[in-house]
Image 1 (cartoon, one colour):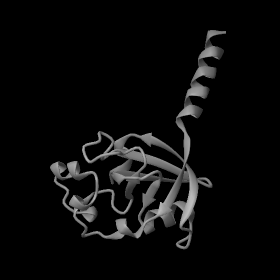
Image 2 (cartoon, helix red, strand yellow):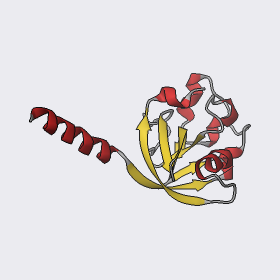
Image 3 (tube, rainbow, N blue to C red):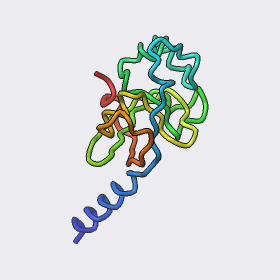
Image 4 (spheres, rainbow, N blue to C red):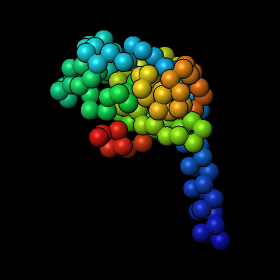
Length: 133
């Protein structure tokens, strides 16, 4: 009986961790040479990154709605987005202003189309190692 209760709790906890959010294509993040001084997570400069293209996860980078300020501890975290069975991991470089904002390439990978500008996807924070090549 304890095993069944434990498994039930784990199933509920796992479900509670997955949430839905709007995900948009944002060409601002396509700019490989854009200084990290132009995004909220300037704290990433202390890791040696100076441009968006210098972040090893590029082009799978973007803005995350949970980030509020540049010194937010969520800067540099990894987020897994799932849409219609496709999974893409995104490295957080900016405040999302209520939604995830992705490069064109990351959005195309997520949706399978370069013309889709916005979708609702499931997301969860995952291990940072999933965002490093």
